[in-house]
Amino acid sequence: MNQTQFIQQLPKVELHLHIEGSLEPEMMFALAQRNNIELPFATPEEVKAAYEFNNLQSFLDIYYQGANVLVHEQDFYDLTWAYLKRCQQDNVIHTEIFFDPQTHTSRGIAFATVIEGISRALQEGEKQLGITSRLIMCFLRHLDEQSAFETLEQALPYKEKIIAVGLDSSELGHPPEKFMRVFAKAREEGFLSVAHAGEEGPVSNIYDSLELLNVSRIDHGVRCSDDAVLVAELAEISMPLTVCPLSNTKLKVFEKMEQHNIVELLRQGVRVTINSDDPAYFGGYMTDNFMAVAQSHDVTLQEMAQFTQNAIEASFISNQEKQQLLAKLHAFVERSKQV
Ligand code: ADE
Ligand code: ZN
Image 1: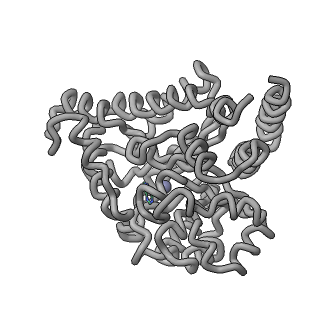
Image 2: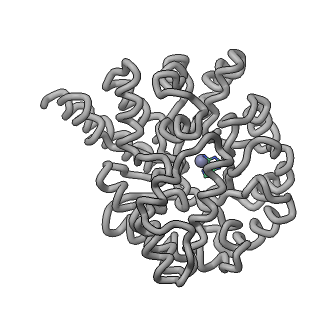
């Protein structure tokens, strides 16, 4: 089996995917029409041409605008279902999905509309496609603490559908400290936690996410390489980093994929994983992200499989479920040696 076949067929686990970031331009147009919403673009091709970003904020501006076409429960269902079908193509066997309720509630869409549409598709995905999933609710860090508290309150009736809270949006100027109290409350309520940190922001955001927010994983975290002591500590405590290679080059965190530090971090013993972040905006789903890393770095097939193993170990499923996924992975690796 050559490297391309290995990557295509490798069972994958995704831990960093914003469901709103899987909105393809074609669906954006279809939903705009269905919901009578005007878009500042004439065609899906025009939308794609606008996806040239210089940094995180330039992406976020266009990403929040795109989300305006999501109005009804069925829209959230269709969005999630389309993503799950893409997962099936890429051999994604388990996925942990972010959603940003404030992007929708701030436009007058009910929290229930959002979560019911997404979770109905996730249930269907498990039944029809055999893809298991968990849901993570993110707070938008550019909004205030009060709004995050209100969002947490709205989530309480849906506790059994949400495994963790997260923190996303503009990292610069919105440090973890701002959400310390709301994360403490979320933990009291039984949620796990994760946070975007060290994507564009400084290493202090990684330290503070660990110390002040008590996170179980760091989303991105690639800036940790600025601090050798931190890298050693992340390895020591097996702290997972959900790294998103195509996102990082699209948003100019790294100029070129060859400069990306994911393979170096893997070899330094950090529990790094490969993820797609906002695949409709960054030019690729899971297989594309694995391929991008393999084509720009000298990596072995064993290292490729290690990314999945890390993701299984870092996931929010039970130990028994982890053992089942690890067995699937190991069976694939053994089979790949015979063909
Ligand atoms: N929201 C969606 N994608 C994001 C990213 N890469 N960083 C921060 N917030 C986001
Ligand atoms: Zn992200």
